Image 1 (spheres, rainbow over the protein chains, first blue to last red):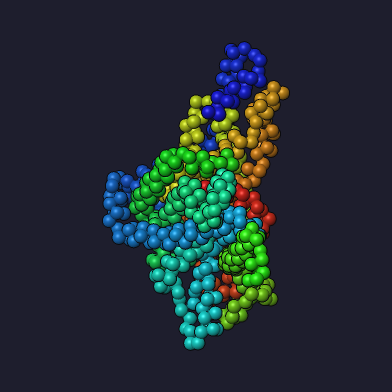
Image 2 (spheres, rainbow over the protein chains, first blue to last red; image 1 turned 90 degrees about the vertical axis):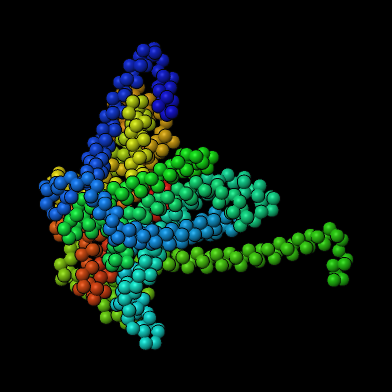
Length: 326
Length: 300
């Protein structure tokens, strides 16, 4: 699309003959290849190679610390042992549970906040400061954030100290040993990290909605709540789905927060499981690789569903690209 | 009543409308107050944990064991000294994080701009396939190929070397996508054409004329690159083994030992040192960061 307009510009500018034009575009062509070469080289080395290599290793029984020992081809044995491992399924369940609670709360907060900030009749003041604060948790290392909250919950931590001070007979207690509390805490921490980010993405989507729609609705007597449910939400469908599915893809790889927070079996996500197979104990690279490939396929399936939905819903996609200022 | 009876129907309806409007205004005002209270509570929840870490960093362990504080104490230097005695080298970890981030920012931003520029400006056969590749790469979670990455790093001799986290930044599909959109919207092709007529070489057109025009987009992407590499933990933990190569997150991981669990004063000082640079950075650039999130919408 763009290339043709580009060439068009070239020809308009030049008053030379057709032939000269052709020579010119041919001579520029090589710069195209020249300019993309670094990217392609880095892609081959740091992206394609590791992925293919992981794929190959997933068919071997490679293990042990020595990187020069390749292992034997066992084809699908590693996959079988992953699928047959109850810890793998438990880690998937844990991941989905932690992610599910997180994503529900996160989107609830994000949508309500975005609707409030976007409402023209409310005219909330100090939006800049609120956005600044709400996005702040996203900037600081997930590892550090996990650490901070762990600090709050451990026996010598702040919450226990407060309870000892204000609750009679409170005995310091390790909250991190209780499965539900721990999982819920990780979910809440993830919500805390991401709600500002989701809110800003949704606000950008709302900014792309035609303001005359709201005007018309106001003239027809629709209040803020009605406007939100009948205009904002339907038109935000695509971007909501988009944010939701990127969150799922990210959630499946969840690692740092649960790892730093409480390295117990209660927070063992798939990524932590893979790490433990591949890089601790006897280093089952084959098994770790097989699990990685399974997760890769799941994530790609989810992503393609996303792209399919996005391409089906053309009208809202236009709104989305408008919101992105493209 | 008597007064109202004296009014004409027109005046009466006006009065009633005013009354209704006043009531609605009060209701809206009450709702608004509740909304502000909610917003302020969330504001505190978002900020307070960081503030508490900064406060606790200046308190001693024995103080922290008995109470919760909102004002700064006077034990910062003691805590720092304790950390120094434990041989915790924050300076080296901080510098490693800086080197990795700087290298990663340069590589990702420069190579991505080159690629995006080529995709937009030149007409060559692989142009569309490369763009499709970029879109595909955005979808594929390459982080999951840890085993292959580990083998690669071993193979090219970058094990326990910070370059292992600088070089992979050269593949930044999200940045390529963002830069492409920016170039399409903001760089007039006539402009490049007139530079060509003036006899500029293609490479210099890009470096001297185009790159400065991309500055706002470059800044936004640089910020995201910085946050990503500053916070990178999964692979550095596996690959950066020797102490002199640790980054800040790796160092934080090493502080998990029992001795630090008891010495919570110094531990908070360590946490404060790890987050302070990002807090300062965010305070200065938050406007661009938030704008970037709104434009990109592509972070996991």
